[in-house]
Image (cartoon, rainbow, N blue to C red; front, top):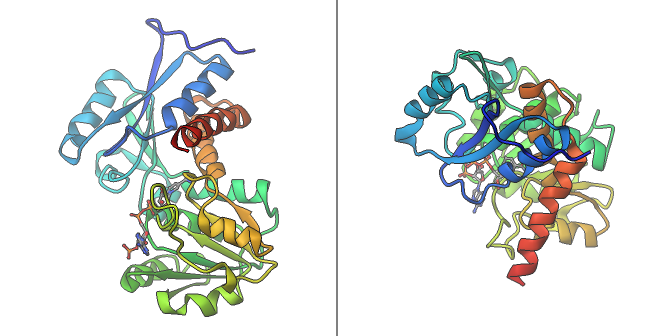
Amino acid sequence: MQQGNRVDSHTVLYGVIGDPIRHSKSPLMMNCAFRETGINGIYTAFHITASQLAAFIGGVRAMDIRGVNVTIPHKLDVMPYLDHIDESARLIGAVNTIVNNSGVLIGYNTDGLGYVRSLKEEVEPNLAGKRVVILGAGGAARGIIYGLAQEQVATIAVANRTFERAARLAEDFSLMAEVKAAGWEELETLCKSADLVINTTSVGMYPYVDETPASASWLKESAIASDLIYNPLETRFLREARLAGCRTHGGLGMFIYQGAYAFEYWTGQTAPAEAMRSCVLQALEAAAAAKS
Ligand code: NAP
């Protein structure tokens, strides 16, 4: 039963920090989760610039803010302010979730776990032995490689516009998985033999919806095309791959499950993932209708 967010002197505080942040759908999603579970919590968005980061962390301790999500550009810079970094976040090199245990701040990264859970539930439960191509070598790509490495995929090729970044990433994960760096010009050849092609770049994101990072004609018909972007819900890359007969996977599920894991770390309760998804979906569809 929905109980509604109550706010009283016992309400526990949560939030997301970023710069910019006003586009974030996290408050909508997390307050929906608190409502559904009847937890007396409230979640808001804080516009924190780089120069305000230290003061914000002081505020988390002083105000006993129980949980914080961290987004661009603070995922790396927040790490020195925390008391412990979980193993996965340390390997990925970025934190997207902070848990405040009575003044002891622990950093986690739920992006990769969220991505893999969504891919397995929505499209393909068995990732073992798959040949994966990742476009882009930023923070999100690092989380995804960590997640895929737990699934025993066969190989991961990372192609990035800036080759050096892909090379560094391949080296950092070399002990965990069979990862190799590739140049952007190798993409077509790599895609032709891949089982799973994942766009982790921002190419194709609103408002540049006519752009695509790769041609769907390069993909095998049996391949899965995956995109981390969820605005639009179906990017040009995914639309063309679907029309070419491939299975497709958009970024909304990753967003929901990275949030669901954060909710579970903070509250110890199972996140109401389906309710969270429908709240966000409703807002995205309403925004898309308003634009058209
Ligand atoms: P990031 O660290 O800034 O990395 C961006 C990546 O995109 C880099 O590899 C960059 O290449 C590449 N790139 C940017 N513009 C490009 C262009 N015009 N052509 C080719 N490559 C380009 O960002 P991030 O945190 O990894 O996020 C990447 C994307 O994932 C964003 O769209 C973000 O919204 C999405 N994301 C989604 C979720 C979700 O929950 N669904 C979660 C996290 C991120 P260079 O290295 O050459 O600059």
